[in-house]
Structures are given as C-alpha cells and as structure tokens.
Figure 1 (cartoon, rainbow, N blue to C red):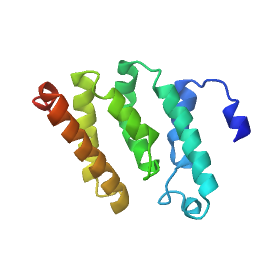
Figure 2 (cartoon, rainbow, N blue to C red; figure 1 turned 120 degrees about the horizontal axis):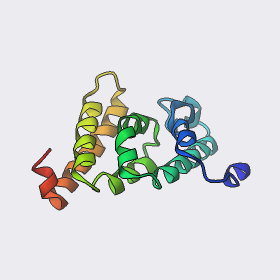
Figure 3 (cartoon, rainbow, N blue to C red; figure 1 turned 90 degrees about the horizontal axis):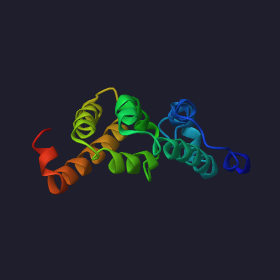
Length: 144
C-alpha cells in the first residue's frame, strides 16, 4: 500500500486496467475478498486511483469509454463505489452522455448473464439515476 501511494499520476491507458476483474473489489469476482478485508481495502484503493484519473478526462473521452466503465462497475465494491460516485458527478454534464449512460445502464440491469447480486447492483444505480434525472434534470428526462 505504501508503494502504491507514492505512484505518480497515471494516464488513462494505465487507469482502465485497474478497473478490470483483476482488481475486483467484491466477493462475486474475487472470493478471497470475503475473508480478507485488507485485500478488499487494497483493491478499493487501486480502483479509487483509476477513478481519480477518470475525473481529469474530458466529457468526450468519458463518453467514448462509457460502455467499458459501466462494465467495470460490476467489479466494484457493493458497499461503496468510487466509480458510482464518479458516474453521478459526470453523466449530467450534457444530454448526450446522460442519454448514453441511461441506455447502457438499462442494458446492464437487464443482462441475464449477470449474477443476480450484480444485476441488483445495476438496478439500484439505475433507480437512483432515474430519480435524479426526474427530479433535477427534467429536460434530460424528457429525452431519454
């Protein structure tokens, strides 16, 4: 962990693999996390570093990798997710990214190949997203 904290800023190309299954922060994809809370903490920190890199990217860049980011969401911790927080900060920047996010998230919540717990994870985010859009972005809601 100490070495990780000394890493310099990473580029997008280096950040995306940190969101992969290799650094999954939930027990569905990494069973050993269930018994090793320290490992879960390490993987959450690694994923957090990747999200910090994402926060510096342009909206166009985020829109171009949105599908991959939503797929990476399945590997997030179910208790807390930096990627989920990131989505809710960025998807409302413009109607195009909001619309893309809506439909991609809708597909993932309906994906029968997802484990039930993962699908519930997507459903919860979808419901929260729709509540925010309906309440705070009626012009976006009308277009999705």
